[in-house]
Length: 124
Image (spheres, rainbow, N blue to C red):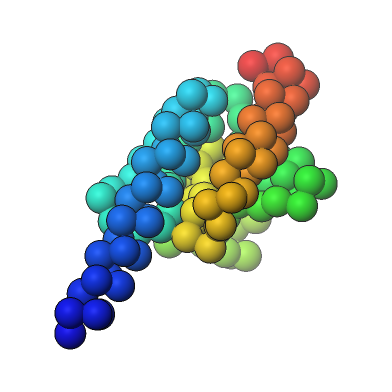
């Protein structure tokens, strides 16, 4: 029991630390961070004019990826309406849970570079 409590506290401390530093880094990039006090991911909102599908396409080229917001849109009609545009097109989920602490700088660098390139390309 004491050992399990100690382990649980260590996991919580680790995720809290990851949540804070990734959140702060994303805010510095101009992303709006939507998060809670638990869990191991952030919901992020892109600046106007940018969408998560294009961001992900660009991230793929760098060996990275995010979960696109429309993939979590429980109201989407799937194939019933091919013209449906999700209200979550400018949102994405970023999971920091599986990431090693040592990759923080390179993770943020990839996201920053891709986001800056995307903004330049669309004139945002």
